[in-house]
Amino acid sequence: MSFTPTRRSVLKAGAATAGVTALSSSALVAQSLRAPSAFAAPRGRLVFIFLRGGQDHLSTVVPYTEAAYFDARPTISIPAESVLDLDGQFGLHPAMTRLHALFGAGRLAVIPGVGNLAGNRSHFSAQDLCEAGATSTPSDAKGWLGRYLSLYPGSNTSIFRATAVSGTTPLSLRGYKSLGVPSIRRFGLNPNVEGISTLLRDSHFGDLAAEKTGIQALDAAVRIAPLAGSNAADKTTRSLTDLATLLAANLGIEVATVDITGWDTHHDMGTATTGLMRDLLAGLDTYLGEFQADLDARGLNDVTTVVMTEFGRRVAENGSGGTDHGYGSAMLVMGARAIGGVHGEWAGLNASTIGQRGDVVPTVDFRNVLGDCARGVLGVASPSSLFPGHTYAPLGVVTP
Image (cartoon, rainbow, N blue to C red):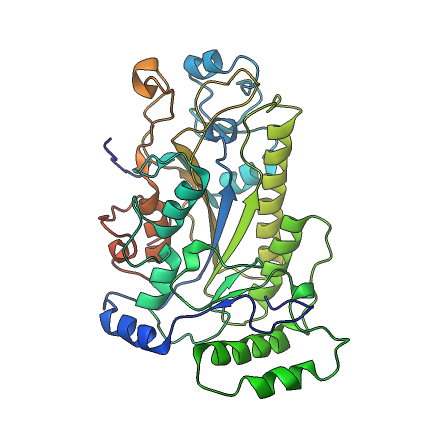
């Protein structure tokens, strides 16, 4: 299939080294020797949000002028009169009012018809490939952000340079020493265990990678301890509020990752006004909209957020009022360096186009969206270096 992109933690209970992944010093030296020269200082900070489960493109970014869309989804389609129009061809789900306002302000790029050329429809395999920035398992076993961080070390030596707001670090950061912070309030040592910090520091005094990262994790806990963590009951709200706090604390964060789960909608998706999909998208709109508003209120005007999922859903609804694993999905880029608008080409939903499986046909390689972010936000002049076997073609969703 042809792609033709165009513009259109350390836990309270104990271990001080948890949440930190590391490369050996020899590996870091080897990588620095191989680092390409085409690199400028980052122009901002990048937040990478992954929607795990295969988010439904056609409920989120709705091709509301196509009869084939409504024919394929007699009970779960979004009525044309309800969508929040973007460009006369696509509209957002009516629950996504905050994102629609950001789009209207030129601060949200919407990219329909995005895909991974691998066409993998297994959740875990597809997620791994997307996070690796590849169509097959890369020989270096790194994530696309881990590859960036190790190839372009720059002058940022902070343990916070790569931060996952999670108890574990995702594959996208694999290949570089990164920090997992499940939440500000849960990151650190148990305050009820007297002398634990001294004990751990005394036992991590050598030059082994585990010992060095253990001390770095303890130091990170000291840096985070004064910060006010969110006590929101909702995990994603808490994660994004904590992330805004961490970004505002000048800790040296260059890239950060957040996961939002729950997008495997095989049944009972509901209607435009009620049900599972409406609730999921209203939640996503709240998460992203409030995160951007929080950044704005704190004066953090250098943060760009990119949002993706591992694959989309099929065009037709299934017999359970849901949608099964498909191909093409949609991506969003929001904030500081996003170029507002709808980007890319659209293949349409005619039967001859979607084929026997009934998939949204991707016309934008997801790596070109990530490559735009790498170039425009992180200062990588040659983003192809981040994506094994791929030649980057600018899409124009981020200010270069």
